[in-house]
Length: 336
Image (tube, rainbow, N blue to C red; front, top):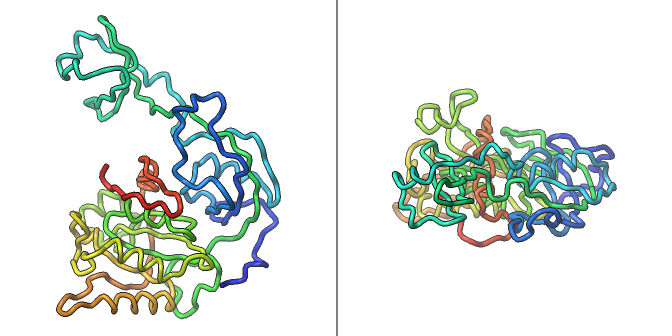
C-alpha cells in the first residue's frame, strides 16, 4: 500500500487532477417527471473518485467539482442528467396520408420510436387523421439531478504516460494500457472494476500521428484499439487488471488479430506495460496460459504514444444505457 498522506492539495482541482468527493444527495430534479428519470448508471453513494475532465461521470458533475475547494460542501445544485437540453426544433409534423407509404401504420402507437431515412430516431407523440407529431429529442432530454456534494480531497494525477523503464511508477495512482479488441466493451469492464478511477479509449502501437477512427479501421496505420486507465493500487492490483483482460479474451488469447467477430491488426490484443514491474506481472500471467501447442498471441510491449479516440467513442456503452457501477455483473453488450 502506498502512503498518500502528503499528496493532498489545498486548491481547486484542474483538468487531470484526481478528485475524491461524497455525494450527500443525488436525486431527480423535483421539476422533472421522476418516473422518466432513469436510475444513474454509475455509483452515487459513499466516497467516490474521478479524474477531472476524464469521463465516467456526468459532465455537469465535473464542472461543479472544478469550482470547489477541499472540504467545501455545496447543496441544492441542479446538474444535467447527461442527455442535453430539450430542443423544440427537433419536434416536427408529417401528414398522416404520407405515413402509410413507408411503414405499417397499424403497428404504430403513441410512444413508438421510428427510424428515419436520415438516421434519426423519433418518438411518435401525437396521431390524428391529419398529421403525426414526431419528437427527435431523447426521452430524457432536459432531465436533471439535484445534488449535494462535499469535496473531500484533490490530488495530482499521474504525469508519466509512456514507458518509464525500471523507474517504477511509485505514486498511488498508476497508468495501465490494454487492447482487447473493440474498445467499447473492454472500457466498460474496467469502468466496473473497483479501484479504476478513469478510462479512455484510443489508439496505440501505430506509426501515424493523430490517427482517426476511420484510418485505424482501415488497418493502415498500425494502431490497435486500446484502453488507457488510471487505477488506485491501494484498491486494485495490476495483476487483477491483467487477469480481467485475459478473462475477457478467453480463447482468443491464442488467436492472432482476432477478438470475437472482429478481425484485423486494429483489433489485435495486447498488454502495454508502463514500467518493468508491470512487465513482470503480465509476463508471468501470460506464460501461465501456454497450453501444449497453443501459443499465446497477446502481444506484450512497452507502452507507446496513446491517441485518445473521438469523443463519441468515450464511455460509449455507458452512454448507451449499460451500467458502469462498480461490481456490476450484467452482461456487456457491445453491439446493442
